[in-house]
Image (cartoon, rainbow, N blue to C red; front, side, top):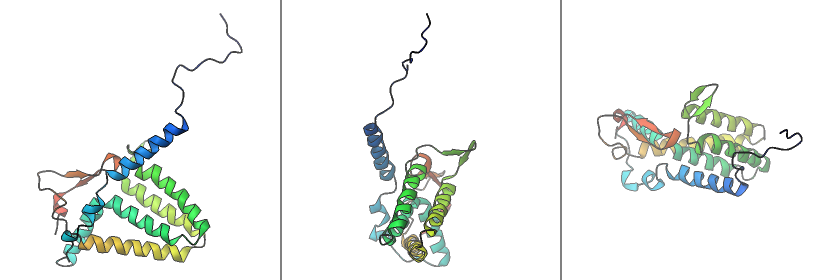
Length: 194
């Protein structure tokens, strides 16, 4: 029997409604940001101490950057956001870039595949950082952006140098992982300099 002119009914279930999409996005945001290193662990005053020397501080910065990378990214982006409050056009561009950050970095639970190759999280973070700065540079808020990025880097380096790393890595035979999903990092105990 022919059925010319009729629209076939889909055999798959109908697409999810907008409310379901929003609730899934909210759940992914909560779980994505909650699985990062806890903020309390990052700012334990009992774990802050000056480093022994330049080598010790560089080792601490490297270890803390690997462990608290997501937290440091949030801190730098918040400083940048606060610096743009008096530039509405820059703020709109920044919000568009934040949505890009959410989907390409913070909310991913699988590795990013581009042209059939897996892209490292560090490459995604660097590309998004450069893209954010590049997009914001067209909004005539260059001074605010440079000062905010400088302040963010100073905060990250000072925290990285002062935060002791002896409690962050458990002694073991092999590398440990921190983080979750595609943002999991393999840490080598060789970087556990205090």
